[in-house]
Image 1 (tube, rainbow, N blue to C red):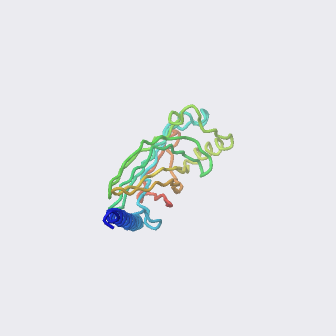
Image 2 (image 1 turned 120 degrees about the horizontal axis):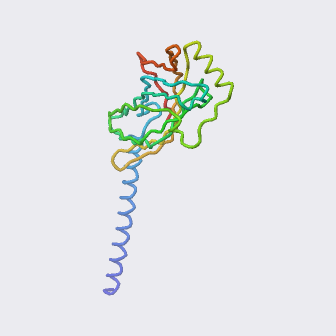
Image 3 (image 1 turned 135 degrees about the vertical axis):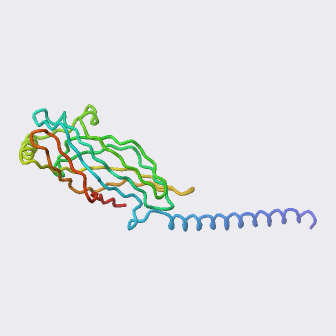
Length: 209
């Protein structure tokens, strides 16, 4: 009997440690799931807010296929969450004429937004930002832009595809987001190729989660 006692004690200790480890693991899992559910970004409370404050244009020249034209769009990136930190990966944005016709590009560097922080970014759209592959603009699109120039008014849309990481402590979530930005109507200064507008009420982009 004496020889069996150490083995029995060892088996009981091993069983107790196994049970303790299992219970501890379950507790950690439950806590992790609870925290993830509590702090994860909610579709009805998307932390990222995008607001377009202004758009300006200079050097409009349809004869040069818009290669000399520059647009500057000022956008506010804001994190309205009080717990989550936000990292927006660098991305390329497209400028569209009347929603469906890309005419220029802008490259935006990565940015970090702490809880309840915001940053105003000037997105510079021009041919240099597009690199070697420029957007192809159909002749009929150029003709419509020429007519709009004569009328003295034009409309553009900013398109973005974002990779956003949300973090709090050891928890993290990554999302691919496709903001939907409204049409930007602007006035042109006659015979200059320049124009722009500062919106009294910033244009809000919808950001589905």
